Length: 432
Image 1 (cartoon, rainbow, N blue to C red):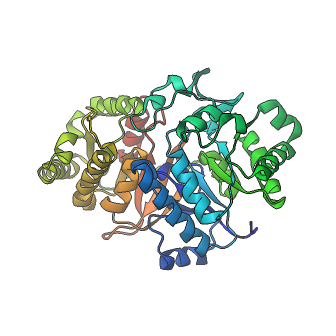
Image 2 (tube, helix red, strand yellow):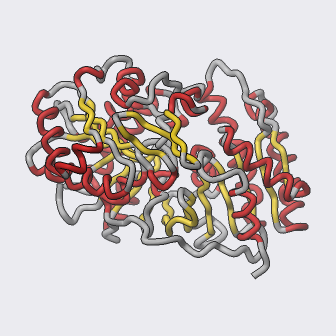
């Protein structure tokens, strides 16, 4: 990899840059746009593929197109997959898309590093955990393992990779690099394992323990050493390793944006944590909530529902300076969940498009929701991640047709305590 080339990150939703500061995010990857980005010489460039919202086949195609465009625009760059720290993923389709574009005719090792220590996602003994209030829970015992589209039975990473790839990555062919060896031997342990697995030229996973950012520093150094030795490595990691690899890891929190007119909150995430956070905000500001019926967005009555919600949100923004637009918490049963999910996300974005002139700060809850809001709701092709506001929550600057530099807050569905959303919104909306 070229020392002066930026790190290219293919993000399956907008939460992948949450640990970085001062990096561009491209929502499209035409040659002209990427050439303009390259001229700014950024340390990292994120391409927002939003593949978690797509079917498996479409995810493979989009990942391949993005990887090929990035490799052409940024020769010598390392291209990595940024994935969810709770293991919800199109694992094999994204690997194949990256492999075919960046490693044609070869079979790179898949290095899995889903640790995000700041958010309590850690890997030890080859098993991925959620750490909260001093207690650890293996991920297969959480709601994330029961995701309707990305369910899994084991949080042991080698077993998870075998399961999610339909056997393409046999657990027996992979290796676990556990914490004691990682810390005892340092980068050499990572490099040796990657070189050994790469030499087999067969599908294999290296699952690396990490419970702190210092562990990820070792992993990054070992990866660089392995690549210098000729190993082919496809990296799939959470945001923490991305920040370390790029050198653009945020040094601290950004100041909170302070609204001068109105704050618009959009919530499409349906994980339990998001629902609890939304309930806390609704208790605090009940007069600001606009409920959207998702069944109408998928059954042919979307235009009517969008118009009603947009009118209600505009009224609340103009009268009270805050509107909270959220889908009702009912989970729809659908034979085609990606298509239904896309219709719901596009519905929320259509509401945003109608009311964005009435707000100067947008808080977007949920990764997939945020990606569609950026593209369709704000009509943006390129944005800048300014940095984190809190662990896992990032502030973006986005140009819209009406204004330059709108404050856009990406608030993942699986981040923060029950009161985190209400507290953040009150701080942003407070009079300066």
